Length: 96
Image (cartoon, rainbow, N blue to C red; front, side, top):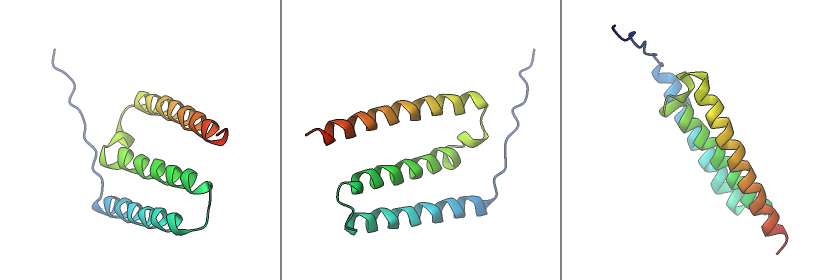
């Protein structure tokens, strides 16, 4: 038996330009958050922005957005685990 042909997906170049522009804007927000007087929220803001940026890279440049739904489930489990670890880190940080 022949394996079914895998259909590709075509992504317009403008999508990549918009994602790149979003990554640049988020980088600027990260740098400005460092100099803002956020006190203890600076760490949380930096982690949140980094998570959004990583999500954009995974979804568009690694083409996960166009894969089977099981990959989305695995990524959600991964993000939930990541959130638990980050939450436990902040609990530890707050109790020092």
